[in-house]
Image (cartoon, rainbow, N blue to C red):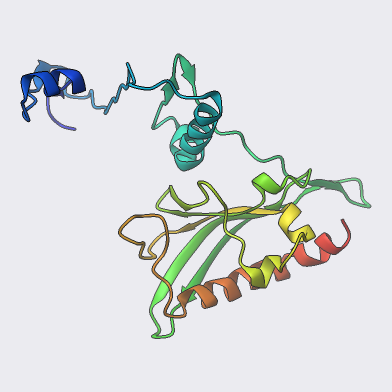
Length: 219
């Protein structure tokens, strides 16, 4: 950003092996200063992907980059198909006065670790309409990118209990743990010092005061 030079490079695996080289020279093109992007194109794979692997990979990309796909910050194209994240259908209830209540609430709360350091959480919690297990649970993000919720969502036993429960069928949400520390592999949070327990307590409180546990008992 702020430069009028665009750098592009092609990594041809077969060519690199044949020529025994470890250096790739970029191609420099002059472009308008306001133009900035990162574009990655993968083609001519060595092995053909099975249809099940394609579905899983596309679903994984959509889940990881859901926020960027929503805002248009990222455009992922798979063989000409623009990937989009499928939003969860939220439960709607007609109240006695005829108004419609959508069971989805924005949340914004703080969590303290055992040493008194404060962390911040924002996002939303809700009940999905059809009780689809694959979609239930909480996706945990950090600064907009999914950390927990790519292959499997977050199901703390203190909230979802054990076995097949209504909580596991209906409770959903996306929570951005903005300033929590993550592991080096970026696939989990570093909160074994009691921070996770405090996070679960705060989340349980948010669900309780908004009537989610009472509503689940009536489903």
